[in-house]
Amino acid sequence: MYIAALLARTEDGWKASDTELDDVETLSDLTDLAREATVDDDTVIVFIEQEDAWFGLVRVDGEEDPRIYVSDAASAARSSYGEILLTDELLGRDPEDPDALEELVDLDGTEDGEPEEEDDEDITLDDTSAVPTGPLGDTRILVDVGLSEKELLALGTDALTEIADVLGAAEVLETVQ
Image 1 (spheres, helix red, strand yellow):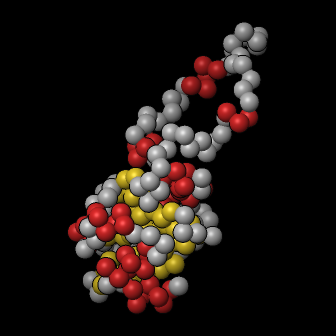
Image 2 (cartoon, one colour; image 1 turned 45 degrees about the vertical axis):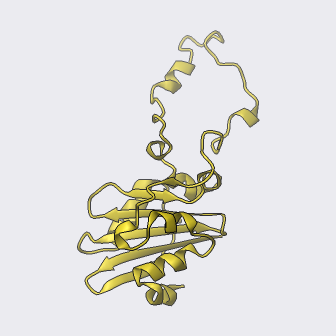
Image 3 (cartoon, rainbow, N blue to C red; image 1 turned 30 degrees about the vertical axis):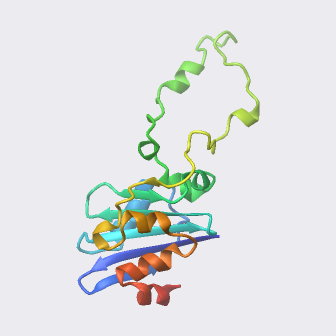
């Protein structure tokens, strides 16, 4: 089970809304969803949590690139919503070469250029071996709103409530939960 919430800063304080991620497939989709939650390009924080296994934050400030923090990258990598947050850039790896597929295809139709078949266990889309265990991303994501790096790293199973408390948004969050 997932919990997803948007916390948007407004002139009157923070506004909270529960959100559905069914149509979100990429970080770009999630960023667009966050930007739609604000009128004046104010700060929006997207919170995603999976059954106390991990949580992730995406902070969108106007047109700037989103900032991301994930509490446990290895756990998030086993989740469809977690995979959205674990971008190549965040993981420190080069994006896949778009021409790599063409290199695997033998254009004359012979078997000479075909790769050897590999065991299905070796080819998985959610291979977490390259994903570190533990926190990953911008640990300073909420410093300017009152949550230090140390406090962020110490958050546990009730992270959303603790973050909302720090932001002064606990009451508005409670109304949408």
